[in-house]
Amino acid sequence: MRRSPGLAELKDPASAHHERCDGSGHHRRLRGDVAGIVACVLAATDLYVGLTAERAERRAFAPAAAAAELRPLEAQGLLSRATTAVRAAAGQGDAGGRVHRRAEHPGGLSSREVEVLALPARGLTKRQIADRLVISPRTADDHIQHMCTKIGVATRAAAALWAMQDELVGS
Image 1 (spheres, rainbow, N blue to C red):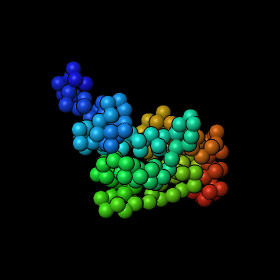
Image 2: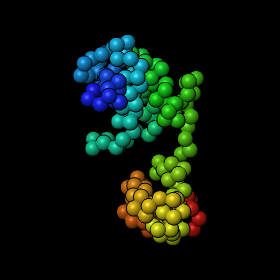
Image 3: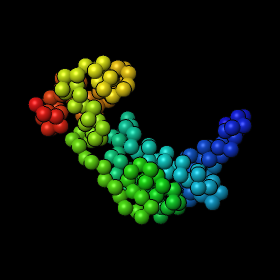
């Protein structure tokens, strides 16, 4: 980044994404007062995203659970402003510390995923789904495959059956 004039000013915060504001991170073990708030927000974001991502050794944390994991780090030195900002950006809190709950759906699906899952369950083709969502057929298929993986089924027919059994769409 230092070689690009437009990105040079971002190199320090970007290289500090594994630092912790209490100095316990790596590779330089910078404290928050040295790394700055931008680096602390980046570190908190990196942690939140890492927790909400599926890993080989564990399932992804639910967004609310990942946000809860950030709270104890505040006492360990991760700036309160940084974790508050990350929780708020993720829809899991605000400046007052209140947590906003997202609507819970079976299989951990978001409201948008339920909306999209209803389309193939109603018999729409990939092309029709793509046209309705104003996306490419490939992107529509990627969304459907992602939801199938998320709910643990292998086919669109199984996804449609699952959606009907969980009363996400009418039969």
